[in-house]
Length: 66
Image 1 (spheres, rainbow, N blue to C red):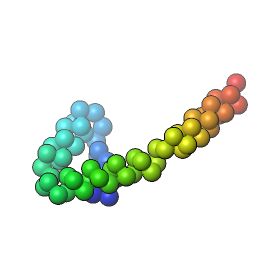
Image 2: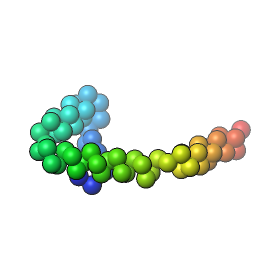
Image 3: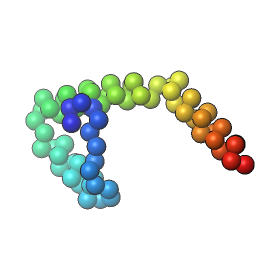
């Protein structure tokens, strides 16, 4: 949806096909809003600092399991 948290409802090829069809059927303004909001979401949630902290957390979990 235009909030930027659009999700594919089904897994596999069927879900991907439905998602592509949904994108192609959007009005131009709806597509633009989704694109802009999706980019904002990614830029907010996946900064280099956040990604580094997440990787560090995963590495620590792996090391603690050994």
